[in-house]
Image (cartoon, rainbow, N blue to C red):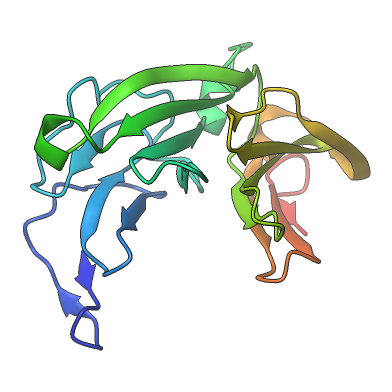
Length: 206
């Protein structure tokens, strides 16, 4: 890990994370670590596994395996979104899709507890997750991609709206081997950048 509290990146060697690809962490307003995850396990700031914090449906080999969003009107609640890995869809596998779990930091003496785990939002997803502020004080948008559709889920005062806004645009990224890649919103929310790692049939990307 890295600690930026002194104004420069200072290595932290007691973290438990060992991931092939994606990981996610979140800190408080003062930069103190709250918890972190590889999409499968959540560790608290003491580097211990949170209660109920194992067997999340993400993957340490997913490009963007997890993304943490705070609840807009409750400083103790955080949503941990997880994206499945390509291999879960191979050989006619159904995969786990897009899911979220809920962390309540008011529990376990402020170390956090997973109170909801693996709530499914999208049966089949991709390895791509990003989020952006709603810019009106009402929360955030969680965005993912599948085939030729962008799915935007509002995360607001009432929690996660399980009914997404769906935008159909761009090429159809078909075949499970082709859903690798990354998705990122610009800071002002006006643009999305998406990278498709197309393995079949050309072993190419765009």
